[in-house]
Amino acid sequence: MAKGYKMADGLTDFYRMKNCYRKLEQAIGYRFKRKALLELALTHPTFRYENTAAIDDNQRLEYLGDAVLSLVSAEHLFKNKPDAREGDMSKLRSRLTEDRKLAQIGAALGLGTYLRLGRGEEKNGGARRASNLADAVEALIGAAWIDGGARAANKIFKKVFLPELDGMETVSARSNPKGILQEYAQSNGFGIPAYRTVATDGPEHDRVFTLRVEACGKTWEATAGSKREAERLAALQALEELQHQSQEKHQQS
Image (tube, rainbow, N blue to C red; front, side, top):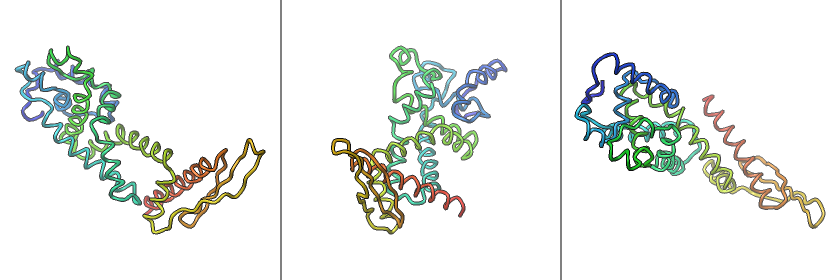
C-alpha cells in the first residue's frame, strides 16, 4: 500500500480498482501489484482537498517519476545510441520528457478518464488540462518504480515512450539527413561527406539527377528530380545503413 494513502476497506474496493484500471495497465504495459499506488498516481491535489479519505495525492510520485523517467531515458540512449554525442542524447531526452510531449502521451493513454479530480477542477476541464495529464504520466512512472523497481519503469518506457522516441528520430533524420550524416561522420573520425553528380538524364524540362555521396569510407547513390532532393535521399540512405550497422555492432559486443 502506498505510504500515506488510506485504501478503502473490503474486497469490494480491491475488485473495483482491479477492474477499473485493467485497460490502462494494458496500455502502459505494466500490471501493478499494489493498485493503491496506481490510484494514487491518478489522484489530483484537488481531489484530496475535497475527500478526507484520500490523505495524499500524486505530487510526490510526480517528483519521483520525473527523475526516474530522466534516468531511464538516459540509460536507453546511452546503451542504444553508441555513436551519439552527449549533446544529441540530451536533446532527445529533453524532447521526450518535456511537458508538452508528456501531455500528448497522457492524452493518448486516455488518462483524463482515470484522473481523480475535485469537483471544481473537473467542471473546468481538468481531465483535458495538459499540465494534469503530464503530471499524471510522471506520477505513473514514479508509482511503477515504487511498485516494481527499475524493471517496472523500463516496461512502461518500452511500451509507451520508445515508440515516441523512434518517431522523433525518424522525423529528425528525414527532415535533415545531410546535417545528421555530417555530424555522424565527424563524430566517428571521418571528414565531411562529399556529394557529386554522376548522371543527368531526361529532357531539359524534365531532368532527373543521380547524386553520389561519399561518407565514412563508403558511397551511396540516389536519383530524384532535383539535385537537392537526390542529395537528401542519398544522405538518408547512408545514414540509415550506417546507424543500422552501428547498432548491430554494439549489440554483438
